[in-house]
Length: 201
Ligand SMILES: [Zn+2]
Image (cartoon, rainbow, N blue to C red; front, top):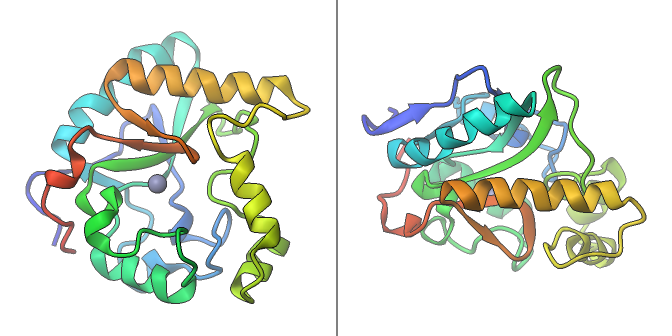
């Protein structure tokens, strides 16, 4: 059951491609959201939606859309993700500590109207087939390098456009009232989002 105070993101200014509903952009190699029956549906708490939809005028003025890679994450899905990748610091150690599980966080990037993603220093999540395979086998050296590149303070990209795209997204999201976190350029939180109840799906 979806809680009554949740909203499904279905506005045409957003493209929903949840990474854990498919096998692209998916570090775990498992379509966990399909396994639990959620599928490719992006739900968020209505308070989060009140804030997020403030991005729409900017998106339209710039002829861009926002692609959603993760939104509210059911507790049961988070537990599965932790089982598949039991690496400390990769997923929050418990659902209570992940704002995704409170319906108050999203993973996003900006894209063109046709869905083509703008370039960023990394992909959303740490996906490449080779890297995902390494991580699933417990090898994390290359993952650590990748995670450095996922930080907001990473400036050493050979592609300056990737840095400016990341900064543009951050400015947009902070201007509408969301918080960034230092180590994942794609993740944005509703302030005080951990105070919301867990997403019991
Ligand atoms: Zn996230």
